[in-house]
Length: 113
Length: 111
Image (cartoon, rainbow over all chains, first blue to last red):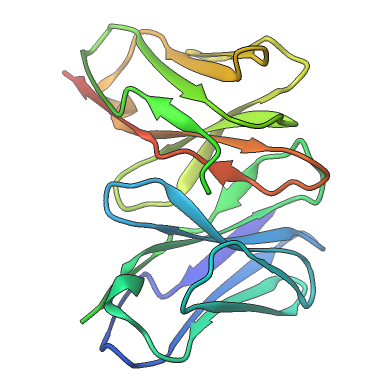
């Protein structure tokens, strides 16, 4: 069966520090991968979307970047965090067909102080 | 940008009542999906309805889709306190399966 791992669950980082959040998927190959951010009490904002290794679509101009070094690994990074980067970050995957559901990780609560 | 807009933003009902949540979207879609999120957790997929379908059922869930009005509704029948959560609609459209979410509805079911 397929599983998705996202870590860490919580993270407190000072302003200006770097960030690296990792997401890995098991049990499937060539998944579509997503990074979303959810501000407190708000909906999900799609940050990055990937259909294959090295193929990253950025949805929102921002202080963040994403990479997909391996087929089932998706990394969200920042060189220098801002206060506004605080939020709940969710990784998700779906099969590379149109009419399929997405499976979410448990999320990372990032607080930038 | 967000494709779906759910309404109401918050809904409070008594256990046993039905809960109806609505979603409107702006552009043509391949499918519309509903997800549930318990506080501080990841999202869980509930149901998917394709653009050529009008109604779908899954247990106590009933979803309708009206592509002429670009809207969908999620009905939860005989609600339970455990149904308390946030509910999101999401759509895919065009040639890819990129999933775009609305802002969500907070459902509270009072025991």
